[in-house]
Image (cartoon, rainbow, N blue to C red; front, side, top):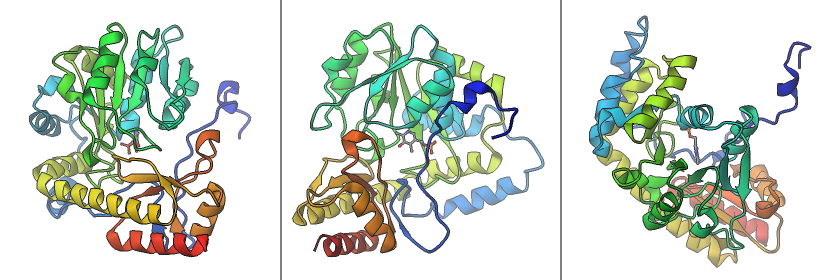
Length: 351
Ligand SMILES: *Cc1c(COP(=O)(O)O)cnc(C)c1O
């Protein structure tokens, strides 16, 4: 680090993204990307945008916002687009987190919540998941902080039912309840349906996982108009042009080609279930994931050792050092063929 770095920053940890090694070709099952490319329509739409790159993009993303409002059956004033859902989460900490009112979230969940809390000096409390990694809604009743829940949850894949989210919102009428739905299209239920009833719910979505656009960087918020106004206050104080022209075009194309992505999600869910059965047949414990990944472990091998052996064999999965899941590996769902390879390699390693 340079001698100019602020002393505050030099003490902070940053988010550690899944590795993207370039030393050889891996079967990449470590960052929950889609194994399927974007819909063919994307090329035509992005190509049109390419020849307008000398002009700034629409900071309000009006065409995309209108399409998203129709898609989600809400008003355009209830949508805000940003550079990936990480961007939206960052706005949420800036807009609604302060030194008094912080956020609560599970001890095992998406790592960025803690990173943003530290970075923006917003206090947070980690509420432990139950022994089986389930989240008990009662643990979130009547809190004195905002709440952030990934649903389905990151790392475990477990999903809450809509009525459980509703109960949490109901018991915390004066707290913001953020529902991060990065994985909702793989078997979860969207809390967007609760917005007419609860003005304290804010839904966060991304095109990265179920819409094959991780490289395009597109996320959005759905919430009541006032919450969107607040998020815009942050956006227009940092970088109004945060969604580039090609990504706005790719997002519109993704909505127009919805059927293609619904099919991809179905394939991914079916591959998830067959992979889960195959891993269980090898004696592994696997969580009941409603996401595009599985969290799995085997009593006879440590998580890190399994991760390393798979990497040596050309397959990348994710291992986390958190105490509670250090004996587990997280496996993104790839194609049927990739998963067959994975199961075969794990079988060989276990022998
Ligand atoms: C992947 C992920 C994100 C980040 O998504 P981007 O839109 O790519 O920034 C946010 N939350 C959760 C729970 C995720 O798994």
